[in-house]
Length: 174
Image (cartoon, rainbow, N blue to C red; front, side):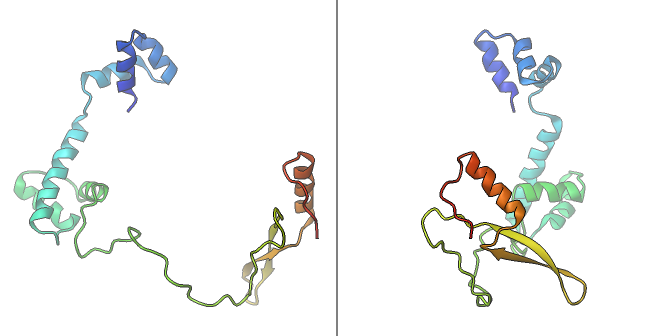
């Protein structure tokens, strides 16, 4: 939130109108925020999150659907989508849910390198350029292939321009 910065600068003697103009918003928005820094929606969301945590702590198997079902018993009405958004935001999940992408590490390679690719340079500061072209597959699909070490005309022009600007030096075109 950038409005507290306006308060700090106003305390240092910088006019609010100048600060708001420089930061790109209206003084009306600043004064509206100053009157009520925490919106009613944020306040309600905070209470809903606290109650969702209490329900989840009572039974960690509860996911957002069960939490949404328990809320009317505590006198709160909220849609299931809102409960899902807040539970996801606060990482309140069932102990039985699948946690995707949190602490997963890559496993061993699934297969051997059948193409026998070499990604090492023959000399220091050697530039490897690649290009992609498409070759029709037997069923009419296109398969993307990558050739290394070859230059197409477009790559040659790029390399010439880089050499002219002094960004690349000592590159041999094979």
